[in-house]
Image 1 (cartoon, rainbow, N blue to C red):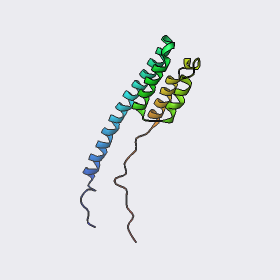
Image 2: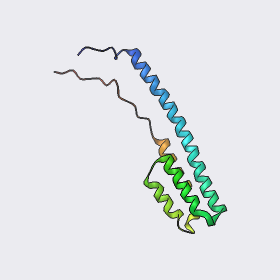
Image 3: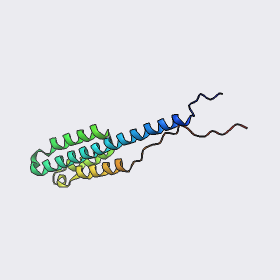
Image 4: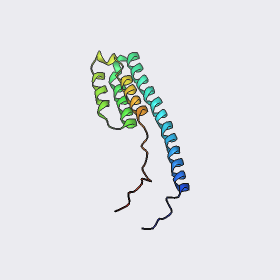
Length: 123
């Protein structure tokens, strides 16, 4: 097959620049997600300390907020179970979950798309 011209170095530079811009945007989204996660967790745990008799609605709202932000994950159920037990709910489970999720989102590296992989000539 003949070359279509997509292997030109200028085209490769454009794709690389687009990927870098996407990486910057994903860092901004991760930072916003981190701040929102910690804010929700701090609010939920703080409200439970101030209003211990209405812990159930606070936990439901916090769980729904985490599901909307992070998707349906089993870690949310692990944090929700101790929150539903009276007395154990004074431990900041939501903040522990926020720290766990934030550590996961910060530790991820962006996936580099492989577009110009060298091909082996057929023999």
